[in-house]
Length: 139
Image (cartoon, rainbow, N blue to C red; front, side):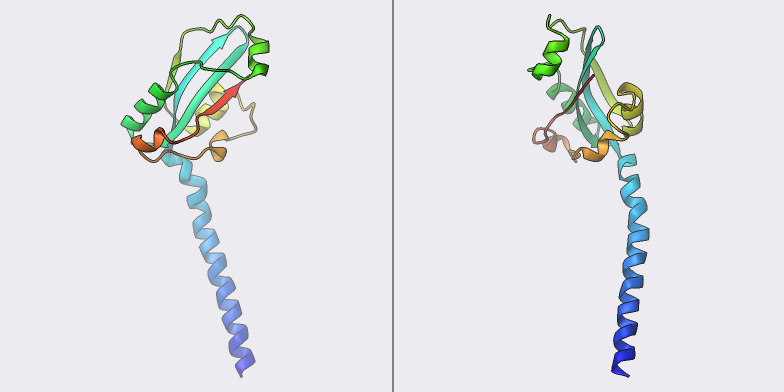
């Protein structure tokens, strides 16, 4: 009798874990529907240099801060510099409230293997924008 009760407890626990995983999985997949990409990009010939931060969908002040924080080309990695040795970049092009999908597939042209937002840590408010590492991409 004790063994049957123990087996039922195990089955119930596994069932509960599976239910939580199934309910939680869509939340994980849709988490980025609540995020937007903000920052800037520059181009020079065939080279594109991008600096962005992920922010909440409805937080325009955080997006504005992300655009301000990423407003200069700054120091580019040597491999980018080798592709653009003149150091001449076109004018800054702001990115405001782009969906992760449009950013990944549109501007980056799916060059980085799908949704790049999966590797970013979102800044949940304007104050966190100052603390987040800026994500950079180039091609």
